[in-house]
Image (cartoon, rainbow over all chains, first blue to last red; front, side, top):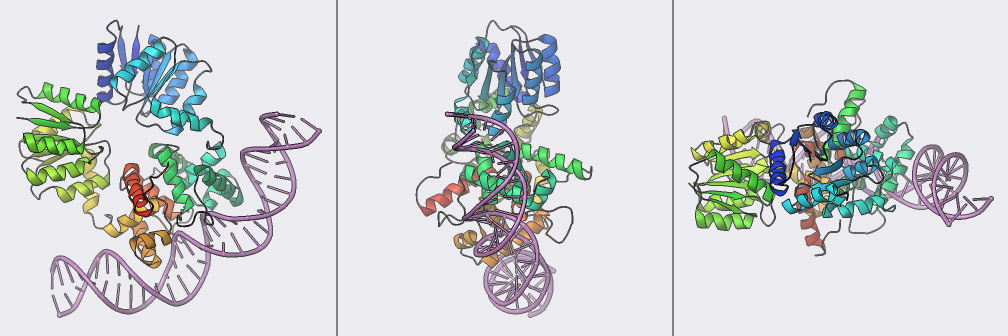
Length: 241
Length: 241
DNA sequence: TCCAGCTTTGGGGTTTACCCCAGCCATTTG
DNA sequence: CAAATGGCTGGGGTAAACCCCAAAGCTGGA
């Protein structure tokens, strides 16, 4: 049985490796990779039974690496590791996993026992999803609270600080259309408008950013990605912090 | 030589402990604590030479724990461990460390060598500051870019999604005063107004939240603390996500 | 002592964000 | 086929956010 561990941080690789060595006395080779691109290359060469993938990595995200690996080797057991229970990632993951594929999703604050449990489950053909994620998954499938891609686009834009006008220009829409998207976004996030719910006054725009971040719909590193995409489009000059 | 390791995550405690055991053959007892309160209790009892403190912990933050420990035992070598290079924390830390106190600040993505280096430095009476933090520290001491406490208060409020009116009511100010704070906040964050800098249109309020988060002036967990404080003040009922 | 910086307050603007309404067109659903 | 849903468009309105101006109180340092 061969295992591949992919994480850009040495500390986490060591932790996982120690854990696996102790818990799987019959383990075969345990290889490591440091980023997404390396992960794909190594996986295709070694065809491991099990791959642990960190999500946030340089070069190629764990999600995309998983997609590429599963494309060529659909039988590989994939376990995602993440620091966050971010809905963004769960959304993305849901799209790429084959209908009856096998995978695990483990948060990094999981106990050692949970990680071992997840590994065993995936090896024997089951899925294992971290308890903290269950709630998130349910939300992504609830039509009343899950965001459409239009709403999500608008969310990212306001979180970057764009005005209605700027958003309209970038997405090739009318300002009215943007406002329409925002209106339904606010509704789904449960943010009261001006009339309703006295005593709780909110600037919906900022409040939406706060709530969305709290729920893991967006996070800073995703936003930074978007930001740099916008910069490219415009001048070609890099963003300055 | 006795050492105290404080972190709420088992994984990180193990990592650090292994590292110290390997690097300090002459190490004495290595104790552990799981949250801030335990850290203070244990430290006062054992009077360790060196304390590693995670910042983000339940019950009592690492910052506050450090404050209480240094108050009673000013000679203790304190090394803060953090996932982020957040300016919030550096600000807070700066206030509580005695003028010529000894401390270290290490990011969790530090290499093993860096951690050992920091430990040795602090034990021999020097400070050790993670390279990634240097820039942040410089900024906190630059008067043109560092925020005053008034501006910081306003920043937190808009990040929570409050309106000018709501902020004024909560801080016992005029709306004009709030807007005045915000104006200077925007200036310090380098956010262009409507007139200046064509082609870059921003909603300053949201943009400020984005830039501030990017710089580590605020972060989600700090905001959540503030949020729950506001909820207490108001109804006593807990916030619902 | 006076100066410099921070903060508050006020009067007066413009622009933007949000509000309610209604309708049209696409897709999917029973 | 009807019905429902999600998305865009439009008109016309209110209130909030942002703009420039100026002045006064307060702090701490030269």
